[in-house]
Length: 575
Image (cartoon, rainbow, N blue to C red; front, side, top):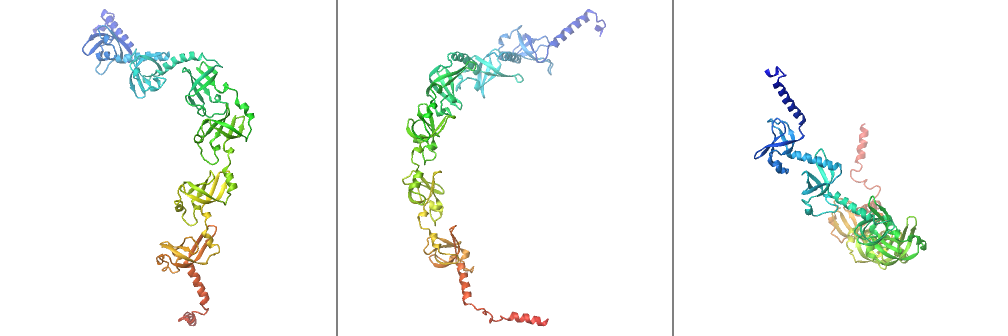
């Protein structure tokens, strides 16, 4: 402590000077700051730097070579490093040359991003969703999404790999240190300058010849003009007639003349029109009348109908439902061809909506009306089965382009409907009775059993409790299947209705072919339902026998018949 007794001594002043000098240097050195170090010594693996600190930090030689500073590995050369720690566990200073270069590179990228300046980079590798781009000046790695590589889809980008080219910085994450670039934006900006020169060539009123249909959307059609410009023709400028979608009128590759109606130099767009090249044909609609027949020309076929011309430019729609009276879901492409000339009736003229509706079927005889006149309800007519389903047949009536509906319940009076249906195949000829004609709904219903004798008429003069003779057809656990004599109906007599005595109510007593009597237990003409019962017949016969042959005094002379009376009298006497 002797040195500090006299602070004015030369030794004290020199110590104070050295101490202040060291403290001033430490104040300027902050962890996370980039500093410069001078190479003082080079070993096999490391270089030693003089950074003005208490000790000399070291940097791996391979690290310097990796970041392209192998030329600076010389004594006396200055190397920028990042001061990571002033002191680690071992008391040493930790620095990094690669991190310093990355931070400096990031600062350059941030400056370029803020000034909206392009940078020079090269694509080094592919990754998920895009490619990795290396900044040539700093070596920083950036991400370029696949959609930003080019303005047109590229299947192969091998010709772009490791080639120096311009990129635009489109996004930077300062927190994570990530940068996103775009090559497409550079290409588009170059094309934008070229497109502006092309746009200057066109003026409102110019006529463009042979523009090619390139594509269409719900709002219009795009045309390629001289392989240098794409023009839009809005939906309303395609035709004077109503157009729901450009595909109704155009086909990709078609050529059409266009009229320039707008030029937007800011958006670099040219608007065109097709309909304004010709006078409005709808002004001639006064020459046409409703419900009158005219010849039209088919110009385009769609799934829902056909576009036809009354005259050049005056287009109308023939809907598929107006082509035929009888065919449902008609395909216009199968029935008509382009340039076909057909007769049609004008059914609607809407001047406000500029819409004309026509019908071809109205020029033809309505087959349903003809059927009503020639073969009204109740008529017998022949037909051929042309289709079937799980519950009905459809017959094409002879002499008519009409399919009649025949339900399985109308095939037979006696058979099972589903079983009967299986007896008829496509091509089978039948004679049927017309049961119903709905002209407005275009439907015809017919029946086969109505052409046959109704077996239920057998019971027309019968009533409940009447006795009829039946023939046993078969027997099973359910009962007896019988058929009345003179009738083709099969009727089931239930097991419980075979006999009064339960021991006799056995279907196995009958083998089939026997003739027996039974009574009618139920008869409903509206529901066409009848039930038979042998048990009921026995009960009726027993009742008749008792009524006819018994006496009021019968049973009085039987033994013990008065025993109960005598016993009751004796009980009264005892009391």
